[in-house]
Amino acid sequence: MINYEPIELKFVIDDHDEDEKYSCVHGEYTDHDGSIVINLFQMNPQQTIDVIIHEVLHKVINETGVKTTEEADHFIIPHLMS
Image (tube, rainbow, N blue to C red; front, side, top):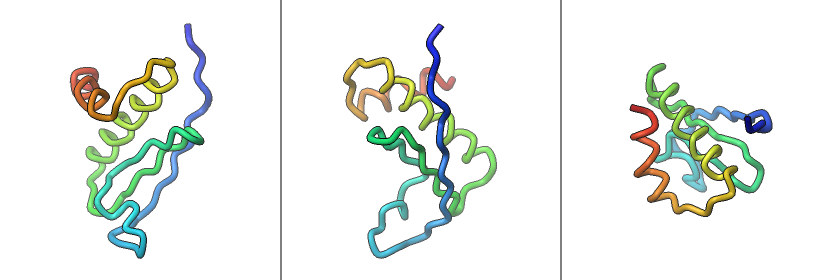
């Protein structure tokens, strides 16, 4: 069994900002601190749950120590979620 650190979720409601950091993004896993930012702007409850699961899977994949690309993660994550 692998023990993982608790997951820090940060929620924002960001339709735009000067950086446009999250304006086009529903969620983002940040590997430098392990936190996950979820942008709730124009998301329904099911999308929010799906985005949280998606970003947690990014974190889990990263914590295995295997180096992957975001493209590779985006290939496998939908298969894991189905």
